[in-house]
Amino acid sequence: MAKLKIKKTKKQIKQAPEKPKEENEVVLPAVRSSDEPTSRQAKWINRQRVLVFAARSINHRHRHLMEDLKKLMPHHKTESKMERSKNLYVVNEISEMKNCNKCILFEGRKMRDLYVWFSNIPNGPSAKFLVENIYTMGELKMTGNCLRGSRPLLSFDPQFTKDPHYSLLKELLTQIFGVPKHHPKSQPFFDHVYTFMILDNRIWFRNYQILSEDGALAEIGPRFVLNPTKIFSGSFGGTTLWENPKYSSDSKELLYCLILSVEEIKQEDASMDEEGESEVPAKPRVGKKKSIKRPEKTIRRKQLKAKSKLISDQIKKRKQIKKKKPTKK
Image (cartoon, rainbow, N blue to C red; front, top):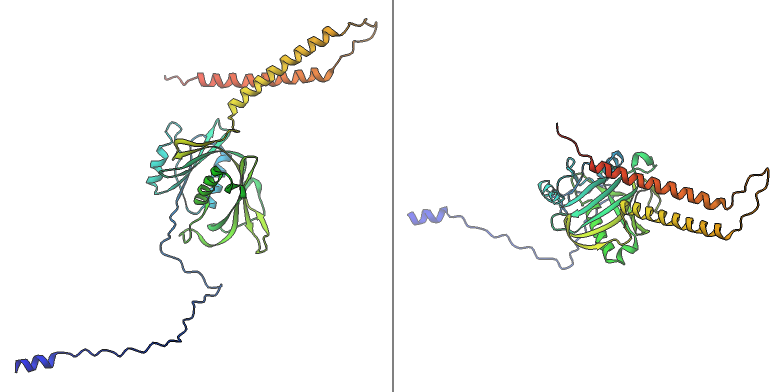
């Protein structure tokens, strides 16, 4: 009897009959209207984060340029100013603490010149640039406008593919300025374009709004020119991969101008002495002043003397500033 009861409690599993597959079945593709919003991913694949900060030696115009770049890059992170006494290798540790794999560091010299570092954290490469011809958005007041957080198109000059150091800089600039797709703080469309043009061995940056599909543009700003000085294998250091032979610092230019001005004055003095010896002295006329001969050369000589004096005064002032040290009471 027990066996019969166990058999009655068991359920028989019925297998559903499989439907025959149709050979001529057509699968329609997924069609989406352009008006429907794109579905956002919970996580983005290209996790690029850029740390943007400066050292304690920049002026107000440099700070405004840094703020303009932050507005253009929704994937940036900020940090307080770094002390000048610290070594640049500390920036790698700061970037890793902020969970960033790219870094833009603004570094000022003499409250006048601005240098910027673009670096790939932590293994490099890194590049150092001198920033010239700075015009911020507040100064330009252009008619162009774009939505904050939208993704940009990157346009590069064809010369970037010809030279190896320019191709390396192109890859570094695309990874820094390119906004990752599906970033939480970005918008999922393109309405402006960054152009990087090479002219006079410098990289010229411009930002334009895309007005229409036929290619009409309106400039937004900011404007600046990057003069590359060195490219290093590591992050903020390492072996020098490339050095700009046409770049010279301000101190070297001042010394060069001073040497040239001194040599020109000596040549002018020698030529004036030779001309004075060769000329026969004329009889002085009564009641008339002597006519000044060759006024152009004398004016040029005075200008060169004034220029050399200004340069020498600047060098003396800098030496005095360096010698002075704050006394502890």
